[in-house]
Length: 617
Ligand SMILES: Nc1ncnc2c1ncn2[C@@H]1O[C@H](COP(=O)(O)OP(=O)(O)OP(=O)(O)O)[C@@H](O)[C@H]1O
Image 1 (cartoon, rainbow, N blue to C red):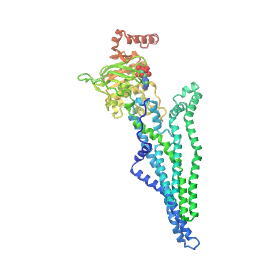
Image 2: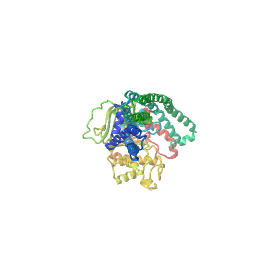
Image 3: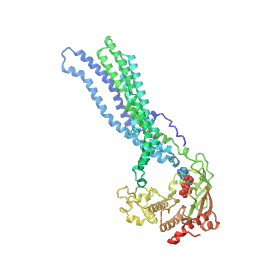
Image 4: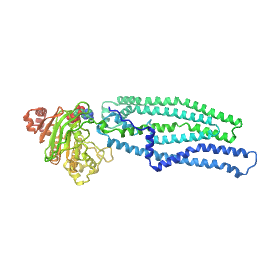
């Protein structure tokens, strides 16, 4: 597995960048409100001390009510202002985290769907990264990168409040103030070190977490519900779910327990530090060096600083939200080129096809998923107007050819061209190439959307209807409860389940629609695997029609299916070992002829009995 790219910025800068992305209004508001909040403890200490001084002066003599109220007024105004600031804090938190989290989600979707190549997505390390970036709820607390931003801002706001309170004390007792500051910083550091441990344990266990998620989905999802009951797998799967969950959660819980056990140390340091500071202040007052008003101010400031030193909540917001933010940064820094098996390989020179008929060409193409090459210099020409078939044993690389032509992987060497122009790097490649797979992806969408997504930008309704009709789906449309708009999934309200053969026709309709929308290469990968013999014959004749309009490659195991193709190419040992029409290949008595006879022999006995078609040489 390749090394993940390093995230080249520190966590704080990363979180600040997220904050900066919330826009100037929210940035200003957060600075204003959190600074205001930080001013409150020191201001209350000073104003309360002044009040004590004034009340001491007034004591013993009769005072008008207005004088007493006047003395109280500054503190009352301050407390009301502080309360107003507090009211603004929660809406600010919501606005800020919502803005950051929304941007985060959009960035994850964009990074994965636009930047990640297929080889990257098939890498388990990358999958884990997606789980972390998608905000697999850290510590089940639901903290997100928005929480990390909020946590950091609150940590700084608290630090500012602490420093201001220390400055108040420093006016009378600089050394005590220094001790107070030191105590606060030590406690913050200890809390930060502790809070990061459970978050790290959670992140380290994401592989187990994914496995546990897999088993949970197996136990409760519809996919394996039948097998689970037929084979009585529930207990076996539950045990695996438990062991994966324990492997993930045990280190995390151990880290949490360790943090709780160390709380007493922080309490002891705080009690010691503030106790000494208060003692010194009281001693100064006793010696007459400190007035009662200043003593009250300083004690209130020490109390404010001490209670503000506990920032576990803010640190947890920051530490638990950070993994998602970090993972997103790593997602963005992973380059598809670094993960591609073809990295660093130069293609062969393009050979212009001037004057020749339109054709898809693979020239000396090499490719492998690992060090072992599946394709070892494949030459293949797929001209428009003639149906080309690709056959070969299991695992020789037929589907791999479709993946290379559609650009999901890049060849290690060689070139793939359409009319002499390399397909690599063409921004319109996804519009030029259409793949109709044996099991087309079954979107939980209407029939209309299931066909249209082959070329979403092509809005022609008549092309859509023609494609569906040619694919033989008219009858199905007539029977569907909401016709075109019926969702093709029983999970959707009003949805229906259609058969594997009908899905194969949906795949054919997609290809026919894509060709109408401008696709010039169509790759049919086992398009008739689910079809009965009548449907297969009909679909193959449609594929012949498509071949008149585009470069069509038909892949099939069933040699009776491909025998009517104009050219049949046998893929063996990573190269095209034979090529020609059915009759030519049978006459050559090579691999194709041997495989064909083998299949014909297998069908001969039952076919004679049932009257089904027997492939004939
Ligand atoms: N994503 C992948 N990662 C690693 N190896 C793969 C991957 N996909 C396919 N392979 C391997 O590459 C080889 C060719 O696979 P491919 O699916 O192209 O064969 P195929 O000729 O289409 O087989 P079949 O006829 O069984 O569908 C096989 O050995 C397969 O195991």
